Length: 531
Image (tube, rainbow, N blue to C red; front, side, top):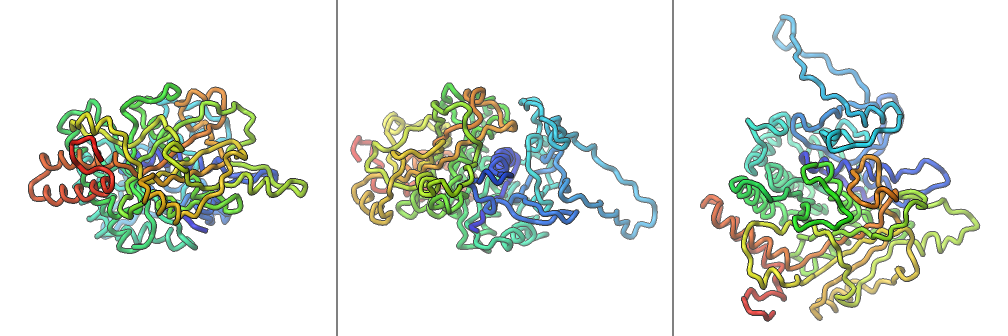
């Protein structure tokens, strides 16, 4: 079934993933008159609830600190069981149980449980990611790390080494891979891969790096895509900024070589298009914007094969990693301003085919196709760039103004309906890759999907179109280009000054090797205006 298992590491990743799961839930259909384009078996697993009924829950592992789950319970309505009795051990006297006050459910969650229309969410009403969650999780998916508390000033979970040490101690005691991940991996018939979402500028970067080590030890050939989240550095005190950049450098150095694909993500600092309004202090808002790009870019990996060729994670990586050592990609997005308001028959749904319908039109003309563009002019322009370029380092005017050279780019375009002009017959990928590489041209692949992005009541009103339409035509891209080298070199420069001398050389050399992969055949490294 080409299953994908998700690992969510930390508060920011859980905010983003909650938007993702809510969107996947919206693609389910409950009528014989509708059929979803999405193959739900890829991200959801069947099971049996406490009352013997069938359940369908996400194939995911959710890690967070104590207090990070909000009102979410490990045991939910699908798995109601009695709590185990308290073990007295060798103590014969009476036991005194002290319970921490439970976090009250939000009005939105209460309305969902009672089957009522939920109230509109606001930045004030969303306190935790569970406040806008619409999906039930299997108890095995919930993993609370009690050693640290969310937002603690006494024991902050900020330093890369803190996360590394926490994973090592927990893994030594419990064997996290065997306890948590193996259960989901063994359920898969033919696992497509693992997608990891984690912060890389705090302690979760160290936790994720050691988790990646274990994944590679046990599942060496499994495809792993890593989505690394970063907070902005604007208005951050110098000491904390240096620590975050050092954390990012360590994460990049240790995680990127282990991952099949590494995608760093942050909210753009250069400004957003005028149709987007985001409260930068609200993780609900920020994660909503990032999730729209994340969900749209990964959509082709979970489509049903009957509607065209499914673009697996492996195919995506093949189109991006042109030279074999370029696995760090830049994520960008745009929203089509001509999206038709209303009138769309529903997110993720096609009307069920009938005998009188032309099956060729229903399944072939509306299918997903890949094509390689003929030149740089075919590259789509995107107005939101989520690649974190800021390091605080000064760069030359030539480097700043120079247009990056693209090695490989995959574009995903969500449309209401595929038109004849958008139907393209792809050339042989192997031949096209070799031809364009020899000519110094980027390898470009475009994927057209007749499925708009749904705007749910759990999603923040950050898009201007939200008042007139229930879904958006979003275009996204992943690309490998020379901008990666500039970012990595900036981190390398910081490392050479602030990291302890015992690890400075090894870390700097590692970053240097990564940067070289994005200069090959393009930037000679000289200061002259010649390539």
